[in-house]
Amino acid sequence: MPNIYQVAMFNAERYPDKVAVSDERQALSFGQFCARARALSAYLKGLGVQPGDRVAIMTPNSIDYLALLHATAVGGFSLVPVNTRYGAAELRYLLDDAQPTVCIVDPAYRPLREQIESEGGLNSAVQWLEHLPESLPDHRADDPVQHRFGRVGDEDVAIIMYTSGTTSAPKGAMLTHGNLSANAVNYIMELGIDANSRSLLATPLFHIGGFGVVNGPILYAGGSLHVVPRFEADAVMDALRLYQPTHVFLLSAMWVGLTDHPEFKALSLPGAQFVQTAAAPLGQWRQDLIRTVFPNAEFSWGFGMTESCVTTIKNRYTQEILEHPGSIGYLWRHVQYRLVDADGKVLPDQRGPGEMQVRGPTVFKGYWRQPELTAQVLDADGWLHTGDLIRVDDEGFAYFMGRSKDMIKTGGENVAALEVENCLASHTDVREAAAFGLPHEYWGEELVAAIVPANGREPDVEVLREFCREKLSGFKVPKRIFIVDSLPQSSSGKVQKFLLRQRYV
Image 1: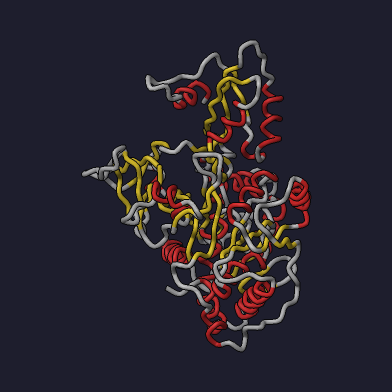
Image 2 (image 1 turned 90 degrees about the vertical axis):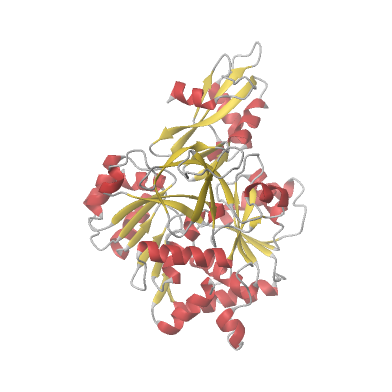
């Protein structure tokens, strides 16, 4: 299957003057965009980046961020997007694990770099860059093979995207060039994307939704993509007015921010064909408001994970869905799936509830440098064990029954409950802690915690939250902390978090 750079080159030949990417400062045709990708690849090679190396990037969205992804097909390196909400400890862990040759860090995050260096630096050498040169020669233009095709195969890793796991240590999901191409084709077929399609990129590129949902497929199909550096309601409102996109993808928290904007309801975008959200479903009144602004667009909610290159279940907000209350949608026709019981045995009726396992060309290669963890989620037959408990009705509509993995998905971020619990339990005023999620319109799930005080202690919940804030990223700090006499436990001693959810929902 052709990779994203090869298809961009094909689009450059089909549409030599057509705008591929733009931002508030410039617009690049497909030919110019591919030339920038080649030039960045040559520049990084000059800094010592070799095929198989990693290049980390911690910046807002930009044209160069996208060009670097395409450059991976030319230079054979892997891009490591870094969450811009990381603190110094998390950044240090990621860089020590990924061991990039180069780390591109926006000047705004210089204090993080300085803190890491003041605390002894990293375990491996890394070249820090705060800026990429604005003008670079295209050294590869005279190489017809490199110019047109790059030097990678389907199984070569394009992105290592770190996602939180069931322990405090994030893990790097390796997504191949084949994964990205297959995902792009799936979305093109599912959403009717073509060369006339236009989309906004406001979802951060360190999130799989930024690369995988609409934005990557738009360029793959020969459409145009307008880049917004970061989500700010005013900036996105302006971009919607000026750019008039046909396809819009935003995380649910972003849609909440837009629909709360005082001028949103005055927008009219009749040319939009498809709008999509992810991370959490939206309330009915927000759906209705979005429909008035995008009167001719189909509205859907995607359900998936980084390891499957985003979407496995798609929920189109149609009358059919409304007739199946509680359903999260239907399984994509492009995804092979099965439901298994707690012992891993395939359920004969495939109705469940059971853990959903998926297989296909979008399933990731594994976790970077963690073969044992990879073996836990990706079996020898290529089935990805999602950890999502699903029930399917007779008409094929799926219902989410919970997670076998103890994760909280808040604001589009996955937070390992154990990491939060270990942090709280390290405070002298806390004997036990349990972190869990509660339904929340804005966050999808509100991260909260229940704690049992240490003997003779009178915890101040704001002091505990500040304690967490010093050790964790902001999105991992509980929004609320409840003080309880004891945590509900099963006969085996496991905390029954469903009882806590019932108590505080």
